[in-house]
Length: 233
Length: 407
Image 1 (cartoon, one colour):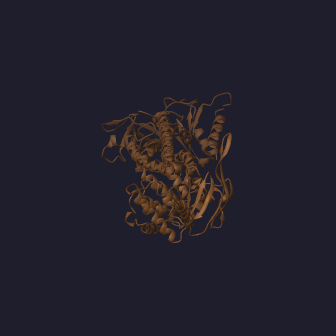
Image 2: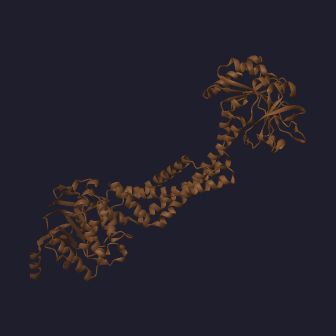
Image 3: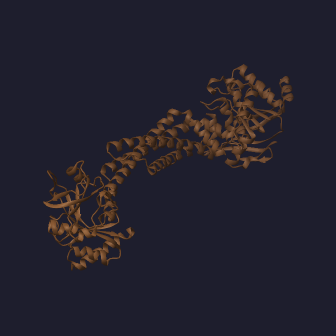
């Protein structure tokens, strides 16, 4: 499903030695997993997320997504992959301003191969509990509601992988819990989710945790093992 | 179609930022409307000039020969031309040159006293050949025109222009009545249809036509002509025919270079083309102003679109993250610019059409709705949109989605 083989990302820094944001990370994610990537800021979380989300390409190593070696794809091919196989959820929601909830959901359909089907957008809004808010402008929605619209947008093209980057970072505790419960229910429906966070309480919703430190994988454990480790401390 | 879906996104973005779109349209509207007015009014004026020329000379497929070398100003008349152009010359042109279809002889003078009972007027009197109406493809309004027999027998018959008819006869029937032209009695056998005004606004209906032989022997006592109008068989070969006529006349008048011609030949088709091509300084300035407005409009589009691109970096990032390729982003932003320019063009044309009707009314030109300038204006607006929209659109397509999403 997702196979990452020794991927590294280096950024040139003029005369200094290049910055290694990611060092030879290797792991697999099987369909239906709920994985959390955790680490301090600067640990390489964002870099890994950008590569997994096909927004960026690794400097070296291989990335297999749903049977395709996307590590060397062109901009056009990566755009197609992002459209068909990946659903992004961002910390700051990233909904379009002056646009209604349902119009935001239609945007991924614009760049796909099929038609823009409003019915489908409305169904998914219903699924995240915002059917009544479909024609509201995004500015009229609360933070939690905006994030649920963003989640609905991530789901619209039935992606193979959902990537959530600090999805609760801008939310209060109640809204954060609602969003995490929604993600968990998506997971229980069999969707593959990769969640990036620095917050252990959010990470606890996942079934597996990959810990990054200085661009390298420091640990990769199932939730039981994580819990056991915590208990031991 | 993906392109259609992207176009619909562009349209939605434009309606979302209405005020911005309005400002972007402004310069285009000004430029296009003034262009549309200029070209429509220019075309209307050109057609009016052409019509007036046609009113005066009746047809464009002719060459006109006048006596005297060099260019003389105004209409030739018996008192201001040298006696060099003869009836025999006209006859030779008609019989010796196969390019010429028919020739009309003209002997004319202005301000001749014409009386009917106690009324009098001073029109132009034209002695012309009986083929005059055929050459000009005209017809009489009432009665008939004079014939070759009238001409050969030096008949004193006259055909009146509408102005003369009106001032001498008012509501009476002029046919069969006797008028006195410079005290010589003539019988009215017909009246002409109105010819409107000439290129300089002169009245073309203040005229009396009589047979040219009668004019020469019984009225003016002159045996030379003021004009010979030769109609060419093939309008496309009128330049060649002009040269042939000139060669024939030089031969007949024994003129060899360096001796100058004692006649002048004008080709009305060429003269008219020169007149209508000459554009007034005002037109040029206004054309410059409209292009300046278009240029400013284009720059406004470019500036506002560039600002838009920086403002909407996040949107671009989001679109890229859900699968928009660089080309899709380029397409959307270009379509937004082109769409606004096109809307500006359409509004400009509407304003222009309204303005054209207004100017036409003020200038007393026939109102005119021309499709060519309208299509050109729309095309110019479209081009402006593409030219000035491409750079901001390209900039939008180069926005790095990672940076844009993080900001």
